[in-house]
Length: 269
Ligand SMILES: [Ca+2]
Ligand SMILES: [Ca+2]
Ligand SMILES: [Ca+2]
Image 1: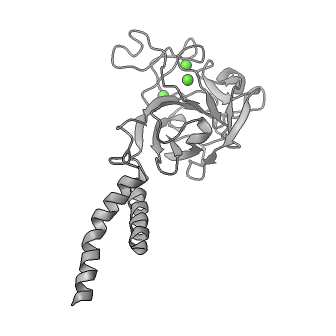
Image 2: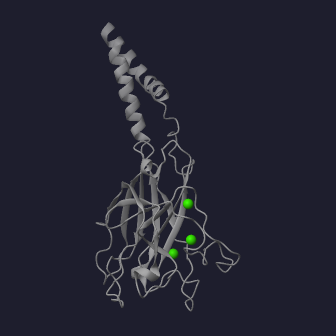
Image 3: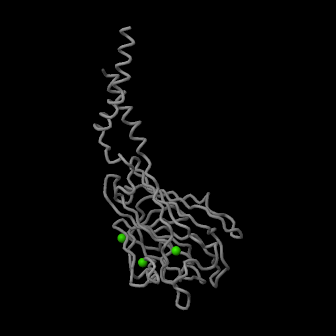
């Protein structure tokens, strides 16, 4: 009987691993953000395809408690002409909201064709409780925000938040994988920057209900993406909410009984 209990527990673990991965939620880049005065405020990408952010994929692993955010972009770190301070453009940092995503919206901000948040900038809309520094992976909270105007001279959206600034507290470490990002500034190809963060470092558990918001851009703000993801049924894989060990054990028992009976029948024969 001890063996059976062990088998049931192992079976429960095997079942739970099937529930490990949610289907990533794709957020297409429908966000514009406020441009500099004089620029077309309905234009999504400035400076050509090399600055285009296609979208982001957000995946929550409800078993391990890891959150993965893929920024899908044609951008290559280090692109752009040298500005007056000797800077080129760089990957911006990832801004995270843990209490929802509420971008600034006003009537007609997308020519009436959907919500493009074309007047959202750092002065309005969502506050970012956390930020991941792209160069180090440091997860910060309580920081000052660096705007595009302070990060790079030839920006398209000077009032967009692009980097985590000083004054913050380091509350954890994320991993930032740029190995699949486009590496060639002369050849715009679609690549991915992957951020992996422990939910618990954001003060959340996989059992919580939450809506996360994200904001990312390169330091010139030539294309900015924002979006939100809820932990509700939209992202939770079917069945993952039934995660109590007892229920998994029962499921395992249900699967094991036929095999157990078959073994007994064989022994009797
Ligand atoms: Ca917030
Ligand atoms: Ca904003
Ligand atoms: Ca955009």
